[in-house]
Length: 109
Image 1 (cartoon, one colour):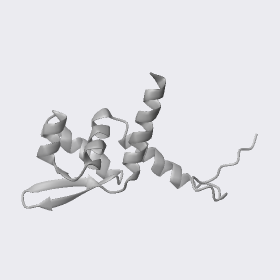
Image 2 (spheres, rainbow, N blue to C red):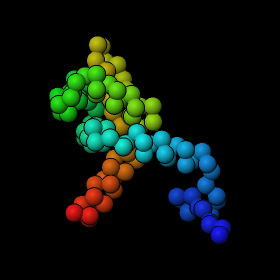
Image 3 (spheres, rainbow, N blue to C red):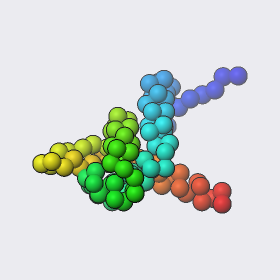
Image 4 (tube, rainbow, N blue to C red):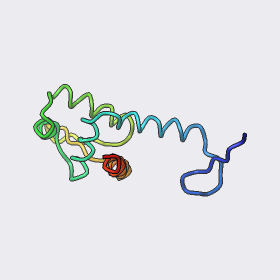
């Protein structure tokens, strides 16, 4: 049984395996509740690690590990400001994924 795979843009071109690998990497990076909350917070604006730690109620070490995972997936970027490291969303896509997931979860309840 042959299936037709099209790109998300609907261009009719077969999707490349690399696109699926990258998509899976992004979804894995978003697969933790703390990382989803980080995406939500950064969607409201740039925050430094200490602010994220306070909002999330988790240790600096934990925040840093989650930020590293999100940065590796290309979802956030950082900028050093003196002794502070501040983070912001790199693209709006992560926020849209989060919004879609929350919408779906509310439909099930």
